[in-house]
Amino acid sequence: KHMKLREWIVRCQKQPQLNERGYLKDWHLVQYLSDKQNDRHNKPSPALPLYTTPQFFERDLLNKFLKRYSDGGDYMFVYWGPQGSQTRLHSDVLHSFSWSYNVLGKKKWIFQVPFCHDEKNSHIFNEERRFEVIQHTGEAIFVPSAWKHEVVNLVETLSINHNWITSANIDQTWHCLTIEIAAIEKEVEKWGVIPEDDFGARENMLRGCVGLDVTMFMLMIILEIVELLLAIIDDTNGDEYVTDRCDGKVWDSAYSIFRLENTLRDVLRQPNIALRLGAILESQTEALEVCECATEVTKYTSKLRQVPK
Image (cartoon, rainbow, N blue to C red):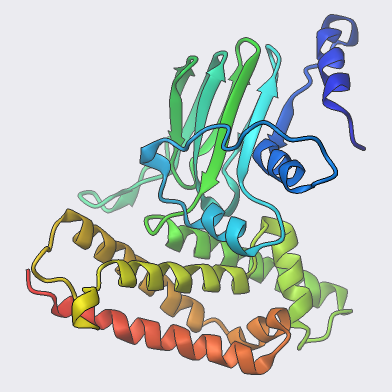
């Protein structure tokens, strides 16, 4: 059921009478305004962008890929809730990072730190570790991958929230996808109605569960590696790397490439990977070409290890 923004505002104003805590979550405001702006039949929308991403959170594989190559959909949200509205304990989708900026208002965040391995004592800490943070207007919160958290709006609050993926947590996202793949296989086996070779259905189910399928994930990694490689190759020397300016930016890119390459190798080991790709690309020939391209990319990145320190 859809509700107009005006209706939602009126409903929130009547909270004491309704004894409810309405919360506008996961509002794709930027996408909505962009769609309106591209629709010539509508009146001009406010100038975009509405905001710029803080520089600490700019490196975002996920939303960059989705905005370029998917038919709508992103992980860029606006949250607007009255005093007392809240988000229950959860960890973020795809084991992504997330950041939240308070445009207006005040939130209480309650974090549950994941269990950590103590190398010195070689055991797992079992005690639950929790802490609270109060976020005020103009402040941003970073949420690490897989950290469970709950949030309460202490006053009426408007915030901008992004889920994002970088080379630093790309392996966590792949781990999340493999867990979902296994769960889907159990469901498929239980139902007994989906053929063993129907990988299109499996990819659709995966995308329905977490918003991303193996095909999209693999293409996202390949494109990012290629762009990073191009960024550090000396245009005047063809395939030779820029060894005369081995600054922090070059090494930072190399680190990202190695992280992405490791995960890409894991994806290539996934059973029936070509069949999954072929089902979505609707061409087994193109699927095999993508797999071949991915293999070549992993081989090509080995040249980076030859750059002198």
